[in-house]
Image (tube, rainbow, N blue to C red; front, side, top):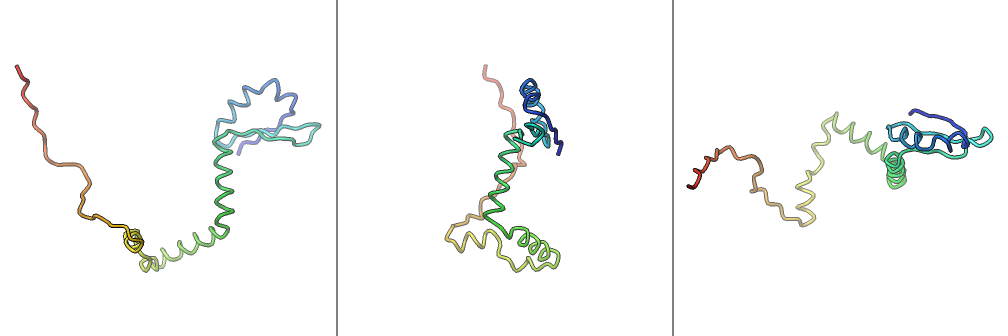
Length: 116
């Protein structure tokens, strides 16, 4: 993170420059009033990302523990006991069509002759 501290009065005259600089990832400004932090300015993208992260942390408070458990399971190959996505979808009643093949055709098309 690139933290910049500036007084609100200084920020007022440099607002457009500051707004441009905070578009760089990790750059934000702390505005002070009488030497005390008053507000922070950051890019809208970083703000949204931070809010989303906080929401995930609130919704899944043990996410770190869950991720650590999955990492251990993968290393010990215990993950092989977990059902596949296809198994879960089938159990929930979704019909899977495994006969559809996706990919790029290997046959070549021939150019058509121009009509005269």
